[in-house]
Length: 346
Ligand code: ADP
Ligand code: MG
Image (cartoon, rainbow, N blue to C red; front, side):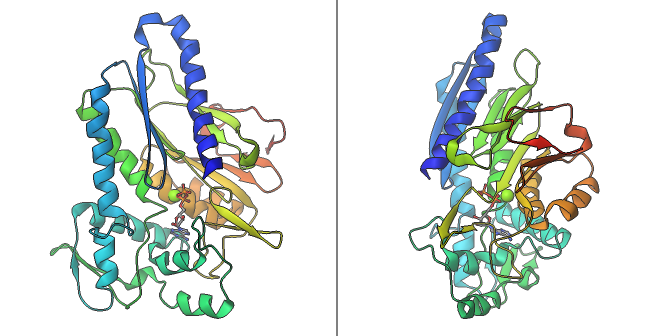
């Protein structure tokens, strides 16, 4: 958690550095305010440009809290909590928000041929990565828990706005997609409040609303997967886009020299293990960026590249375990490598 905080601060500083530079050039067009808080189990920072009105933060943060209360499995009044209680027994009426996130999740399960799966809740709980209960489960336990994991066992009745998980013990974890959804909703809220230019950073899930007040692009740091030393490996210039990174370094523990991270392969029951260290997805919707970054990390470099290239208006930055960076066509001239330990592959 501490490492994560450092990272967020670095991203924050980078944003500050670039805006300070601009301030000198565009004196009166660049007022901005920021507020950070611990929510969604991570550090979030909202930066609003061209305003000094701190009262805007209250409705923005309240909105995030409300969405968290709906979409977190850990909140006793949430839809996901009820779905868990009613699993294998009966249908549960859910909010529009839950329905929307569930449908998008299933879409990405199909797209990834089952690698992305929000019914992974029981297995995530078993590993307990990032909690005080983290452990390498016994093979037996994994085998048994895997019987509860299957996105095809999510039954949806759209007309009645009801959902049922087929088997008792099943539960949903939106950890790989909720922040993206909430980032998009936060952008809507900020626009409603009359702000045209903002940076929404939900624990590294970044959404750039508009461009800088002087119409130039924002410059955003891409996390260095060797995050322990802090810093970023490069920067991306962008406006009106979301940049979401998934990596094996976000939440993990080490046991007997082996790293166990928080993105789990639903077929093996073990953390995803391929040639990728991290993937950043750049596209207009944060909802999609978030789901995709997790999906593509699970797919690995080759399949991941093919999949990303099959989608329109989606760009990606892949970081492999041997410190190579693979870029999709559309991001090449927007990306600047700043850390010499990495090499851009041709
Ligand atoms: P982060 O939340 O660290 O930014 P991700 O968006 O990649 O990173 O989401 C990782 C989270 O998604 C995990 O902590 C877990 O809650 C959940 N998760 C892990 N493996 C999968 C998977 N195969 N499919 C769907 N969700 C997953
Ligand atoms: Mg994700």
